[in-house]
Image 1: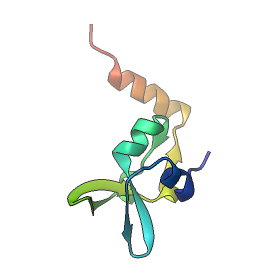
Image 2 (image 1 turned 90 degrees about the vertical axis):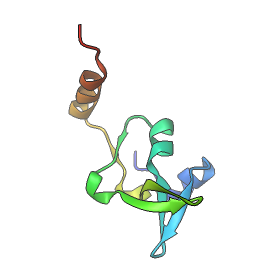
Image 3 (image 1 turned 45 degrees about the vertical axis):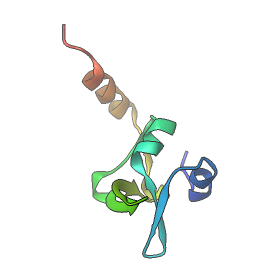
Length: 80
């Protein structure tokens, strides 16, 4: 499911306007939608509330594939 800017605004995700585009706070989106991924080349560091944070456009957010989900589980696993 692709996220839209209007959905993120309704969820009160912080955003910044840059070159007439809305860029949303990556960390807030990760908290709300843990199964989304953010291509590193699409992330911009922009000021929100006087602090620079990583932001992304809603159109650039992607769904995780099964491989991505497996890798996340692997990285979170504690060594025995």
